[in-house]
Length: 251
Ligand code: PEP
View 1: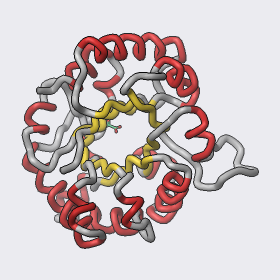
View 2 (view 1 turned 90 degrees about the vertical axis):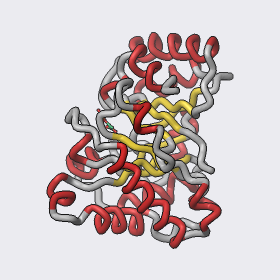
View 3 (view 1 turned 135 degrees about the vertical axis):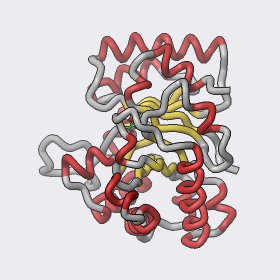
View 4 (view 1 turned 30 degrees about the vertical axis):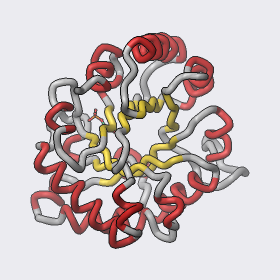
């Protein structure tokens, strides 16, 4: 049975001071009221060092929002997996639809990132999801299968256990449109079954499949009531402490 993961994707938001203020509030709240879920914060790169200090000896983990697959070299503006681990991250978001759409990342490049992340001991939070046009034309499962198979190409069974899959329908990200719990459950079941075919059933059962797309305190409860939904990747609603805490305390 997969564990629960609630991850905050802050995208390009928060100065270091703002990140520290949030981190202190989160840490205090979770010390007073611990939660069973694994809580992950993905700040911009500039906030990682400071938050690593804040979250030292806590149960809150850090994720980078992106990485470059090469280990070092002439890649101006890029950050390697080794640097991300060194800065204090346990996870790295890979394949987010904003990176696919705005920066032209394709499945092969995402596969290179996942491979490199695992090589450095980072746990990838691997995002997949269909556009509205793809859903409306009945192509959702085909798109999910292609992204999953190409993104996980040559990732061995031992490494898949360290991966989190985030189902993020593109039409639900930052739009206020949430997929219904039934739609998410259906997609997650498809992903779980495909993972069982690609790997062994036992390993597939242990992989957290989390949902992202306009998750809020108001809808997290009904999403988490579905058997195959193992958590959430939260954008907008993770920027305010009260709102993120309400999501983390979804029970
Ligand atoms: C995201 O960017 O991963 C996301 C899910 O954003 P939002 O919650 O704002 O839809």
